[in-house]
Image 1 (cartoon, each protein chain N blue to C red):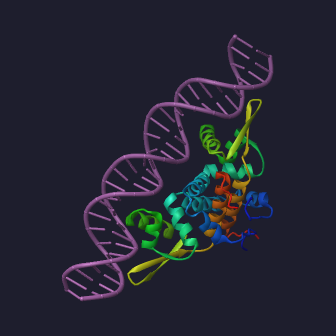
Image 2 (image 1 turned 120 degrees about the vertical axis):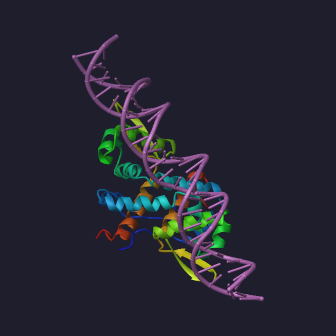
Image 3 (image 1 turned 90 degrees about the vertical axis):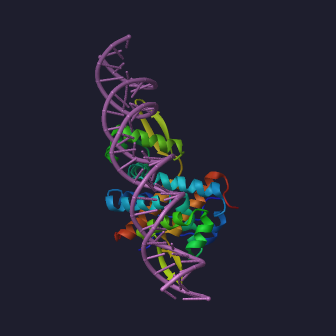
Length: 118
Length: 118
DNA sequence: TGAACTTATGAACACTTGCTCATATATTTG
DNA sequence: CAAATATATGAGCAAGTGTTCATAAGTTCA
């Protein structure tokens, strides 16, 4: 039941940044990246560690081109970084903010869906 | 620095639900609701407590129709509930999952933007 | 160098989104 | 009831999105 997440002064944190357009916009951009099924799966997969493009392609079950386009967007937005390893390109999360949000989002989604991980 | 959020077994939570299409879809829907500037401001405003439509309209600086359309979407997705009070209609968050995500999102956005609330 | 393999990219397209405009519905007051 | 106020809704549209298709670019190996 309920997630293991705790957060002090919730309302304060929110009202604190409510007037700051930049911060709000940045927040919506992060959520936007997480709002697509393919991208969400990419990022969720990367939570467990770095992955090659072909691995991600298999996990997400979409075309190579589709994966590559989405990876580009995630790269452009600074959510993932890439490095080459021979013919392959390995992706990883740029930081753990995203992993945190995915975890929180999944927990709550599970709760709403009535599958609150026993 | 860093947010006050903590979360046990992050990777476990993620990999636990990674195979569950329904849960993943539900998660993307939540993030989608938070990915729009207007909706985000609506929800962030509601974090501080219930608000009437005209209040939200003023906070978000968009037309009455635009606010109403977005509120409908948030209602349809179960993120907010409404009650009538005379001529007015008062909205509030359906649960605190959303407040939590907004809080986490804002904190991280602030950090990325270099405004990590001192 | 030239295949084979892997990833990236550009164009095109169907589909979605968030808004505006006009209008309908609901509530209060005179 | 009629007018005023507050909110909701439907149609329409410009802009954005995620995919596919074709092709380019980078890497390895013979």
